[in-house]
Length: 252
Ligand code: 13P
Image 1 (tube, rainbow, N blue to C red):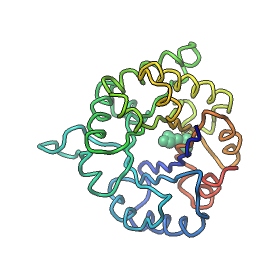
Image 2: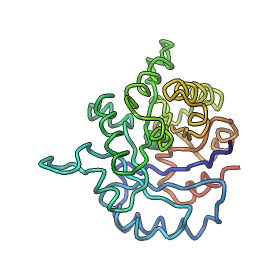
Image 3: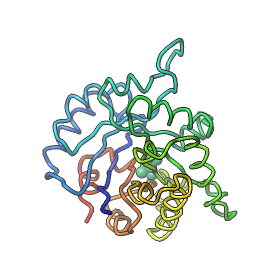
Image 4: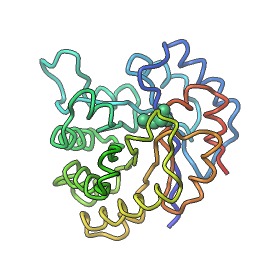
């Protein structure tokens, strides 16, 4: 089954509102209309509303970088899935390694966020990936399997079909060290088979989009996207400039 690929710009803690709007206005003019791929812009919370208003193409979507799991209440500083839906998001990143490692997010917290997003009608982009010491100790599959099983605990098959997985090896994020296409493909295949096991449904696993993230650049994107189980990209640093992100969207 052909999966439509998804190319996502995770801007992390970068760009003011005016910088963000200028970026999407320029980018949308420069990229030709896409039929086999979709673009996801994931700005900081402060720019979501303005970027959402500036998006004017059917192949461009808005996403957020994080959320809380409650709908509303006395949770100073948090943002709920309902609010993200309200501002126009379609996707929300969950369990990014920076959330796990800098802010102490656990698989249990991530699982609550995944469920809350699905309740609000949003698609979670669940990020998984091993640290360098885990890879060197031969624990990559074990770590990724635990993150998938615990992050997706008690999710029914229909909801699993709405989820996107992003494989981001921690050692490749912001380091300039990309996983080789073969290394990424190996883990993507493992993720797809794990989802088949969790869901008990081959078609859900086959329809699942699995993105690769970690030092994706214009000069390595084409090789990565040739792998059969890499269905898109989650791009940090190289998504901050229009010219490099445009080239990544236009992988060939
Ligand atoms: P870099 O592309 O800067 O390595 O970041 C990857 C990432 O964390 C995207 O979510």
